[in-house]
Amino acid sequence: MARILIVEDNAQLAYGLRNNLEIDGHEVEVAGNGVTGLEATMAREPELVILDLMLPEMDGYRVLRSLREKGIDVPVLILSAKGAEADKVMGFRLGADDYVTKPFGVLELLARVTAILRRTGDAAEAPDEEQFGGVRINVAHRTVFKEGHEVQLTPKEFDLLVALVRRRGTVASRVALMRDVWGHRAAIASRTVDTHIAQLRRKLEDDPSDPRHILTIHRSGYRLRD
Image 1: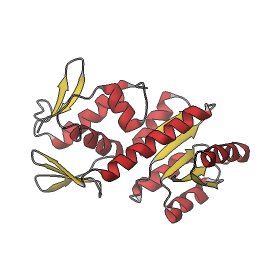
Image 2: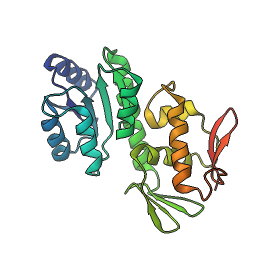
Image 3: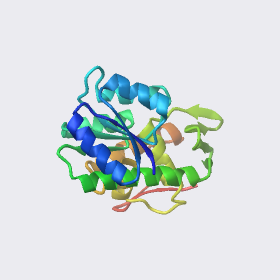
């Protein structure tokens, strides 16, 4: 069972979601606008937020941005009628963990919720610190240091780095990384992974054009070498 907050202004849809999630064994609360959703997230500390984008008072993008700027890394599943790729990319860049487009199947949504909770649960049981080369990662505090100096990563860059490190040198395909980091079975845009890898290299490699640690494996994906 997990504590889940639904931020959705459509009362009928929110009721249906709440009912299905409670049948699945979760403890669910509903907020009807962006302001109360933001306040409830900070006050209740849910284990997952299901967030609509088109909300009164404060839209979902602003809610998500505010959470991440405050250092609140609660998993967020965006639920929206805005299905354009640009909208999805914006959500992921702001730190969303998954993005489901309305209309949606209830079973698919429940599966996405389960996957996110499983990933965060696995992360809670994993070591608090990881290291490769001169890079040290504090997973609990979501901080990264290179040669003793802190490096600022976006939420998704951090999650991608941890996903690579914890594979212990094995190759990760783009599809696998999209699934593990963004929650998608098929890459909505495999370039999303490539772009984030490029940013990690820029921030962590001595020579991003000739990386020593974050390696491309031709036609396979990526591997982190210590």
